[in-house]
Length: 138
Figure 1 (cartoon, rainbow, N blue to C red):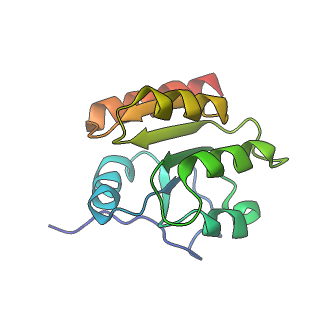
Figure 2: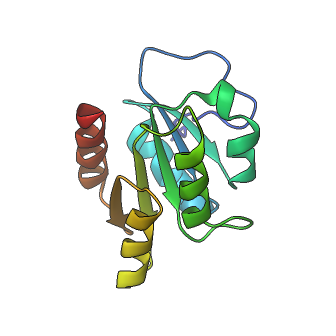
Figure 3: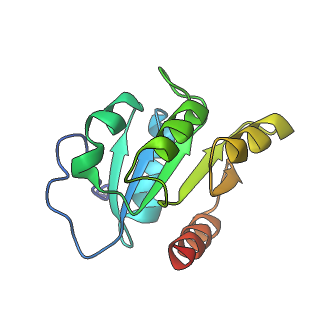
């Protein structure tokens, strides 16, 4: 079975009619799931670490951002905080997806400016419904 295509770094100059979702996720299994779950409904750009997000933020122009908390380099909380400080990213919904099941992860996410929070593993339906809610509230 052919894997659905998601854009990688440097492959996002042309925006489609679908909302652009930028996901920062270093885990390859999660990347595969995101491709399977999201490429029909979203213009998906997958980044393995957050530094690239800030290097390319102007050209990415995301409609929504998904962040893992545990990333190499700056973690998801730092990325979330930096996004909220960026002049063009203040109103863009940020969804945190993490396997961390402690209250500090959730509370810290909201304190840093996350719009929503989901625990991994997540089902396709759960993820799509949450993303739809975030896009409608935008």
